[in-house]
Amino acid sequence: MKEFRKILCPIDLSEVSVKIIPYVTTLAGKFNSQVHILFVVSSMEHYAAFYIPHPALHEFEEELVKGARQKLQEFTAEQFKEWPAAKVEVLRGDPAEEIIKYAESAGIDLIVMGTHGRKGLEKVIFGSVADQVVKKSAVPVMTINPHRAS
Image (cartoon, rainbow, N blue to C red):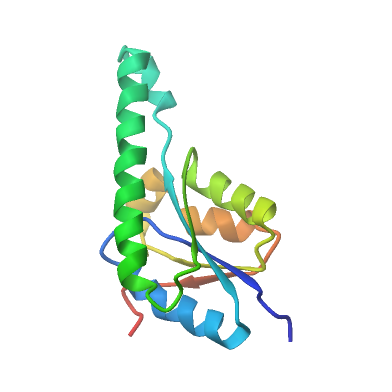
């Protein structure tokens, strides 16, 4: 069986993120893996066409990144107590693309992430980061439906 030495856990810091953690920690314990926790702040560049001044968008994005770093540190300290060496990263851009790029650059062996279970029009409008990652990832991706996880 393949060993997963580096496991990436991309999270969105929503209330369902906590439900993914037991899967990550169980796998990391079994394979003695290094855990990487990633949050991606969506880029605001596409809103520049709405006549919003670019500096205002940039400042807003900076505040989002700053807030995400703080929240991710708190989340990691609470949820990954047994994994103090977990690598924590906040990136900016398209979530699916940044997850894929991070996995490649960090030499990740497995991605474990949640789905939101969107259906119908909601899925068409918002898309699915998990679907995109599954389709484009060079490494295995384990998806967890947090609404059905126990």
